[in-house]
Length: 301
Image (cartoon, rainbow, N blue to C red; front, side):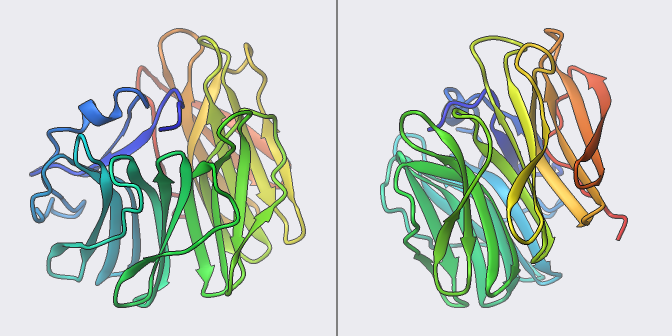
């Protein structure tokens, strides 16, 4: 398990709306050990019980096609994929190549026969694909590392982000071109991993990051933008000055995107919302003290 200061966890519990909470990497398993069911935001619909399960990502492809992914099991973690067919949630069998340390953090799709889920299989990257019938593992270009976010624009255009390298970690960006996953040059300092990704077209994608430093206020937050030709840094904070970590990002266009996370300066954690009014520009909007935000949607389409 990778050691970020926070882990975005979408935990679905009985009679409760979806809640996004930060969980330390070291305490993640124990923190979610008692989670055993699924709920839907609209009306808190309960799904089948999944003992010792937790969900970290969700994607609504259509009203009757929604996926949620995560892991289950305390001592032998396995991948967990749940599907909503418009009437009920059900658990769908998914590969666990390295039982004991498998987890899925992100999911995205474009149709009932085309969806992606990404995460870790022990110390290595894990990529799964849904073909309309079953989940299959797809080999990626990177071994050591992990993926935290994925977005699909079309059957031939998808992005996945995370961190590469067992030692000397660095940002990881992979692109799906319809036949294989390929590594894209990811700007940014070593030790920095990407946690979220969003895209609206083949020429517009955003990725956000955050990695814990040696102490409070030493975190590095970064926003990267894809312009159709290259990834470039749009915002980069400085350790000891900003102390922020960004967890999630959503966009409606190249000139309107939102990124959210937490500011660890001062000691009391404060929710942070970053708004990008166009490539290369960003401004911070602090939230309530002691309230880390994990995800937000931009609905200004």
